[in-house]
Image (tube, rainbow, N blue to C red):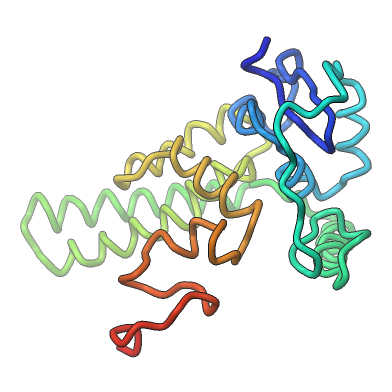
Length: 229
């Protein structure tokens, strides 16, 4: 059971019985196992009240934290929204929720997503054949751009659990990251856990420093001479 314990708001829960019922799939939920997942829990659910009702149905193993919670710095990205000095996240969440209500759209996938995905993958396959098999360099360059599109708009959405309402379909298309030379498993930890928990933090957000010092992706990081170019 210890492998399925998580800590949220200072309380320890066993998420094991909920793995197969989790709307986002077991893969996403297991990212919370063995760690304080308070920030992940708050950042990942647009409807916090609904998420907290689900949380209340889980077995609370202990009210004693098994790892010290990392305090949120005042004035930064306080995901609770209610105690943030700026209220930024609370306002963004409210506007996003209202958008989906006003447009009557589903926040996950749909026919357009499937069409875009099939089109993109077919174009990648064609560019691979012409560029790599036939040896036309220009097509290989186009293939490189298309692979970036696969990473940005297919595997990204799938590994976020947003490609489809089906966790299985999300998992399958999440492996597009492996197809383009990455790792779906590593991406979920690096992006979902490290980036979304502390976005734009120069020391905690891995997206800020994973290309350092070659590229400067965060204005809070020091500027080196070659960054001018």
